[in-house]
Image: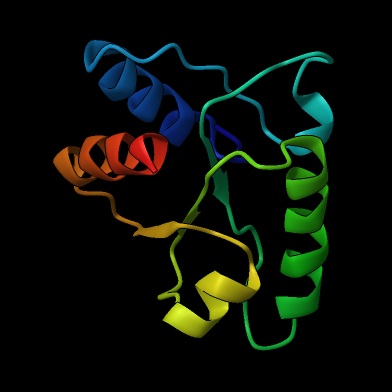
Length: 113
Protein backbone atom coordinates (compact mmCIF):
# COMPACT_ATOMS: atom_id res chain seq x y z
CA UNK A 1 0.00 0.00 0.00
CA UNK A 2 1.35 3.40 -1.03
CA UNK A 3 0.02 6.59 0.59
CA UNK A 4 1.69 9.73 1.88
CA UNK A 5 -0.59 9.82 4.94
CA UNK A 6 0.89 7.68 7.72
CA UNK A 7 -2.41 7.51 9.63
CA UNK A 8 -4.21 6.06 6.60
CA UNK A 9 -1.44 3.53 6.11
CA UNK A 10 -1.73 2.43 9.74
CA UNK A 11 -5.54 2.14 9.71
CA UNK A 12 -5.64 0.20 6.45
CA UNK A 13 -2.71 -1.99 7.47
CA UNK A 14 -4.60 -2.96 10.63
CA UNK A 15 -7.87 -3.63 8.77
CA UNK A 16 -6.22 -5.66 6.02
CA UNK A 17 -4.01 -7.65 8.40
CA UNK A 18 -7.06 -8.49 10.51
CA UNK A 19 -8.64 -9.77 7.26
CA UNK A 20 -5.66 -12.09 6.76
CA UNK A 21 -3.50 -10.08 4.35
CA UNK A 22 0.20 -9.43 4.67
CA UNK A 23 0.66 -5.69 4.18
CA UNK A 24 3.70 -3.64 3.24
CA UNK A 25 3.30 0.13 3.45
CA UNK A 26 5.27 3.01 1.97
CA UNK A 27 4.83 6.75 1.56
CA UNK A 28 5.93 6.57 -2.09
CA UNK A 29 6.88 4.02 -4.74
CA UNK A 30 10.53 4.92 -4.11
CA UNK A 31 10.18 3.73 -0.50
CA UNK A 32 8.90 0.26 -1.39
CA UNK A 33 11.71 -2.15 -0.52
CA UNK A 34 13.57 -3.62 -3.50
CA UNK A 35 12.39 -7.10 -4.38
CA UNK A 36 8.95 -6.61 -2.86
CA UNK A 37 6.37 -8.90 -4.43
CA UNK A 38 2.66 -8.21 -4.24
CA UNK A 39 -0.66 -9.82 -5.07
CA UNK A 40 -2.33 -6.38 -5.14
CA UNK A 41 -1.25 -2.74 -4.85
CA UNK A 42 -3.36 0.01 -3.30
CA UNK A 43 -1.96 3.40 -4.31
CA UNK A 44 -3.05 6.89 -3.34
CA UNK A 45 -3.52 9.44 -6.10
CA UNK A 46 -1.64 12.20 -4.33
CA UNK A 47 -2.35 15.58 -5.88
CA UNK A 48 -4.79 14.35 -8.48
CA UNK A 49 -6.74 17.39 -9.57
CA UNK A 50 -7.63 19.31 -12.71
CA UNK A 51 -4.03 20.48 -13.16
CA UNK A 52 -2.16 17.48 -11.82
CA UNK A 53 -3.77 14.55 -13.66
CA UNK A 54 -0.61 14.12 -15.75
CA UNK A 55 1.51 13.95 -12.60
CA UNK A 56 -0.80 11.32 -11.15
CA UNK A 57 -0.58 9.26 -14.34
CA UNK A 58 3.23 9.53 -14.35
CA UNK A 59 3.39 8.42 -10.71
CA UNK A 60 1.10 5.46 -11.36
CA UNK A 61 3.17 4.47 -14.39
CA UNK A 62 6.07 3.98 -11.96
CA UNK A 63 3.86 1.77 -9.81
CA UNK A 64 2.69 -0.21 -12.86
CA UNK A 65 6.29 -0.65 -14.08
CA UNK A 66 7.39 -1.94 -10.70
CA UNK A 67 4.38 -4.23 -10.25
CA UNK A 68 3.50 -5.23 -13.82
CA UNK A 69 0.53 -7.56 -13.98
CA UNK A 70 -0.44 -6.95 -10.35
CA UNK A 71 -3.96 -5.60 -9.77
CA UNK A 72 -3.91 -1.89 -8.88
CA UNK A 73 -6.53 -0.25 -6.67
CA UNK A 74 -6.63 3.54 -6.59
CA UNK A 75 -7.19 5.27 -3.27
CA UNK A 76 -8.17 8.91 -3.52
CA UNK A 77 -10.07 11.76 -1.93
CA UNK A 78 -11.16 12.68 -5.47
CA UNK A 79 -13.99 10.85 -7.18
CA UNK A 80 -12.52 8.71 -9.95
CA UNK A 81 -14.55 8.22 -13.10
CA UNK A 82 -14.48 4.81 -14.76
CA UNK A 83 -12.58 6.27 -17.74
CA UNK A 84 -9.92 7.70 -15.42
CA UNK A 85 -9.66 4.45 -13.49
CA UNK A 86 -9.06 2.61 -16.75
CA UNK A 87 -6.53 5.25 -17.90
CA UNK A 88 -4.62 4.65 -14.68
CA UNK A 89 -4.70 0.89 -15.29
CA UNK A 90 -6.62 0.21 -12.09
CA UNK A 91 -9.11 -2.55 -11.46
CA UNK A 92 -10.95 -0.52 -8.80
CA UNK A 93 -11.02 2.74 -6.91
CA UNK A 94 -11.56 3.41 -3.21
CA UNK A 95 -12.77 6.87 -2.34
CA UNK A 96 -11.76 8.57 0.90
CA UNK A 97 -13.07 8.53 3.52
CA UNK A 98 -12.91 4.77 3.31
CA UNK A 99 -15.62 2.28 4.12
CA UNK A 100 -13.33 -0.28 5.78
CA UNK A 101 -15.52 -3.24 4.85
CA UNK A 102 -15.38 -2.06 1.23
CA UNK A 103 -11.57 -1.94 1.39
CA UNK A 104 -11.50 -5.62 2.32
CA UNK A 105 -14.13 -6.58 -0.30
CA UNK A 106 -12.40 -4.66 -3.10
CA UNK A 107 -8.98 -6.06 -2.17
CA UNK A 108 -10.32 -9.64 -2.15
CA UNK A 109 -12.01 -9.09 -5.52
CA UNK A 110 -8.85 -7.61 -7.06
CA UNK A 111 -6.72 -10.54 -5.94
CA UNK A 112 -9.32 -13.06 -7.15
CA UNK A 113 -9.24 -11.64 -10.71
